[in-house]
Length: 279
Image (cartoon, rainbow, N blue to C red):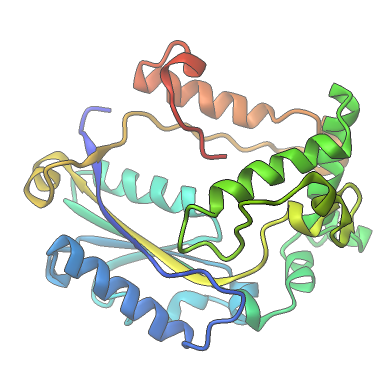
């Protein structure tokens, strides 16, 4: 990238199965605490990207009530539907235009306030996917998991091992809603079945929580922190085919996006050069 963009601060609430704090209060306190940590005033923020899901929030244009508590009023504000990674990507692109020197990204969810499977069904394409009447996050992920298992001769025990590893890692995070340092494969396989082969302890629970991140161009970043986290490469790709029209055992869009990001960052051997992958 011609301009270096860095992450200069972040803040996160504790994720809980049920949080009594109203959504707007949660967002307000989150952003206030991030500003205190970074020393940035609201007037210094050039653009704000909000990230939420209309179905989860129970209303269309759901960010309308979050603009004020997020400090986005009278700012160049926009919204990304659900995806935190794309929110950061969007903020990055806005900074690269040169019109702003800082960008605030704020994402939230109140999973305790909606029926998740019903909401996720309504998120699907109405003329094709939704007509199956059984598709949602868990069932579509289960179709993909089963295709992957068949392609690589994996077992449900293999899937359970991933949960054991992930939840053990989560036990080191005090903000995690679900953490089990001594979880066993047997316990994972004994948990409630959502959609075969996926079980409760293989799927992250719907939670209440929010997080925020502040990005800045190189000049501003160096003023705000001694150790900005520079974004060296990004990639993006969307698959166009419906679920029944593509191979679910692999993700061609992810391969292309990763290849583009590695090329931009100068990464030639990802396995050897990267220490942590967050999937």
